[in-house]
Each structure stands twice: as structure tokens, then as C-alpha cells.
Length: 217
Image 1 (cartoon, one colour):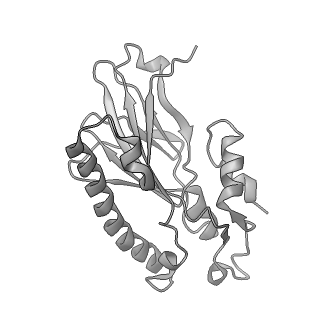
Image 2 (cartoon, rainbow, N blue to C red):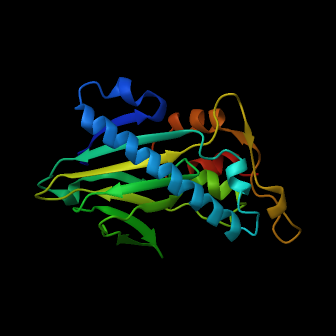
């Protein structure tokens, strides 16, 4: 029997103050300040990712990939039998990118060459996960990372993940970038809207690559 040890709370960027009425004002300001710094970092990150694809630095930003974002806090209580526990099971993120801030406890693992590898926390560092949606629009030039979070025997763990989800409303169509489609690298995925992706995601159990399979040609 699998024991699930996790508590979850969601902060939507445009509803921070309403969702955090029970938290001290200083902590609210710290959250908003963190989001502001994250946005500056993401601007630079999308420029670097654009250049890695051989595109102009502002290409991905022009697609408004950073417009829709959700900050999620995860709290994992200490679990006496972590071998029977998964904080979050194996999955990929249904996002363009995800920025993860870990505490000093750790617990994040990524699947590398069919083996689970721990991602040890580095003070002051963020973990950048490529999500399914970036894999789709890059036509598989970028790959979404399969990962999970495991429990700890004696210590609780907290992490904050900021998911960048693109524009959901008004409806905006995304798909493989035309400049990346060639005779040697034909189109792999069909076009989609964030609304379609979300409906598919929430209709299934958490797993890996579900968004990719949904729009694969």
C-alpha cells in the first residue's frame, strides 16, 4: 500500500493577496518580491533558450510563455517509512518551464538513463525543469524531465515551484515553431491551446509525458 504524505497550497500570481490573508504581511511582501525577481530571471532564461534553438533572443518571449504562471508551495511531513511513501510520484510538468526553490532537506529526484538521481539542494540556486509544452514547441529539441519527490524519515520538507503556462485566455494557439520544422526534423506535434492541455491533464492521473502523447501526430 502506498502512503501519500504531502500537503499542498496554490498561489495564483494575480490573486496573491486574497489567498494569503492568514499569513503575516511581511511574508506576503516576501512572496511578491520573490515573484518579481523570478520574472526578471525568466526573461533572461527565455532569451538563452531562444538562442539555444538558433532563434532570435526575444523569440520565446514574443510567444508570451511567461504570461500565465502559478506558484505552488509543497509541504512534505516527515514519514517514518519513506520506502512506502512518495511525496509526488513520477511525472513531467505540463508547463513550458518550472522553477523550483528547494529547502536544505532535498528530496527531488530526476530519471537519468533509467536510474533515479537525487538533485541535491544548493543554497541560493533554483532548479529549472523543462516542461512538456516547451518540448512540444521546440519539436523535441528540448526534452521535458521526468522527476519525483521522495519522503524523508525524520525531517519535513518544503519547496516552491513556479510553473510558466502560457496564455490560456483569450485562447491562444501554440504549436511547434515553424523555423524548427525541416525535412530532416518533420513536425511531431499538432497545435494546441492551454485550455485543451489543461482539460486533458486534469482528466488523467499524474504521470509522465501525458501532454506530449495528447498532441502527438
